[in-house]
Length: 300
Image (cartoon, rainbow, N blue to C red):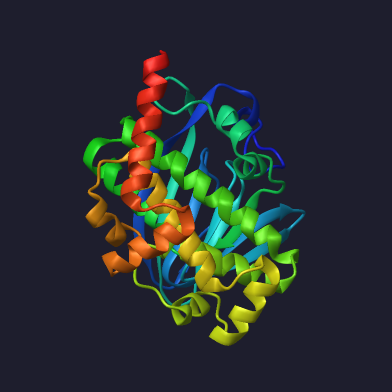
């Protein structure tokens, strides 16, 4: 794979290829001055603990230096000359991957990129590297990938899917970092919404949601209502009821249990909330969906 100016080789954008792990390892570094070197594969260097510096050779004796601390990671294109410097201690997870023919369960990356703007932007990212701070989502995906590789090897279907998930996670994180130019109020609201969508099944309070956005609860409440048009708790309730509708329509989970699945502790309160939101009780809603499916099948 030849060197080029972008983050990924152009074959990732134009060819019928999927990513394949070439090497992976955990490493606890102490004081270290690594010599400049290159890899034939794209590399992810994730700092799990401590801190380090990654210096990238920019040509003509110039280097770009990227400090990394716990939760930071860098993605390096193949054949980019770089070196690692550790002044104290640094524990890292490294994954190197290259291209393989798209003969597995994962479609070619370029096809996936057609369906996901963030992934397409990642594959077209300029420059030899990108450095990001992770809220643990990428690390969780990387750990799952490494565990599967240890158990099954790099050719298994789940390993292929997990590596694709890692790239999707990185792509979304890069897209979010580029939104830093948005008004700060929008970013706070986005953080609050993301927290609610990820934790709606738990007994979360306004204080928890505000904490996720690093705001005082009363300030988040004013900000959220101005930006979204409804209070935080109203948004959370509406999201829970939409999740309840999905469970009633597409699963056989007992109606008596669905309140727990959407984070409402009291079944009677859940029934009252659902009727107010949907205009009918959960029993009536499920029955209506069943009748609709029966009528559709009847016509066929």
